[in-house]
Every structure is written in C-alpha cells, then in structure tokens.
Image (cartoon, rainbow, N blue to C red; front, side):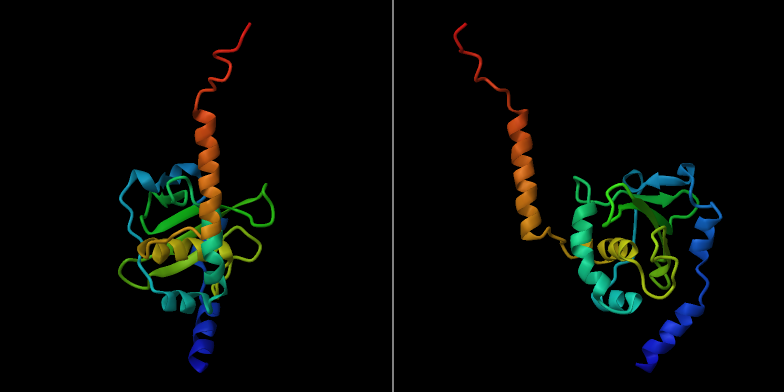
Length: 184
C-alpha cells in the first residue's frame, strides 16, 4: 500500500507536459497529424498488470472492451493519427458516452525504450490528470498496448448485432427483381 501511495504522490507532482502542449495549441491543428494507416506504427505492448498499475486499478480496463467496440471502424481499428513531428505522440477522436453530439480528442505520448506510456491528455471533463486516466485515454491505451496483441474479439452480443447489420446491408445491395415479371 505504501508503494502505491508513493507512486500516486509522485504522479500527482508530475507536470503533464502533453496537456500543456495541447492547451497552448501546439498539437491541435490538422496539419500536424497523419493517419496511422499511412505509416508504419509501433506502440508498446503491455500486460494487464502493467495497465492496472498505470490506471491505479481495473475499473477503466473493465470498461475498455465495450467502449472500444463502440469506437472501432469497419476494419476493427481506431481512427488514430500520429504527430508529424514525433512518432511518439498519437491522438484519437472519441465519441462521448453521454452525448452523441460530443467528441473528444485524446492524446497519448509513449516510448518504445523507456516507460511505455509517458503522458496522456483528453478534452473531456475528467481528464487533465496525471494520476489515473479517463475512460477515453484508458480505452485507447488498453486497445493499442494489450487487446490487439491478444486477438481482441467483439463480445457475442456485439457480433450478433454486427452480423445482422451486415445481412441487412447485403440484402439492400441485391437488386429487387420482384417487379420484373409483373403484369402491366
């Protein structure tokens, strides 16, 4: 317990340099970002215990699977961009769980050589912290560092919904020949 308290105290005293860059507008413009599918992209792999330590518990990790399912694109990926200036800062737009009209950007700074996740920041109300992480940040980190390396699968309910949508779409794509032989 003392080790955990010390780690929390150390993180609390740490300045969130990434938040400062975002708030000063140095990471906000579209010209500073490239889509991940345009480049080779490495992100540190982490184990669940490492993530629990990073987030000070498992609450965000438990939320991450369903939250990730809601935000993956048709290829099973997040719409993630990497900074043109440094390949160790990414950003991702995430839909709010509470409002369909609200989108937040979350930024993650990482390292492939030192501490895997060095800083994070999100525009949501519960972010801008150095102890713990909001659900948006945690979901991105969990997905990129753990889930995609461990054969992430949609939940059964989500797979049924996805199959139903695909069936409806394929039915809509088939030509309707019912009027071809109708009497005039």
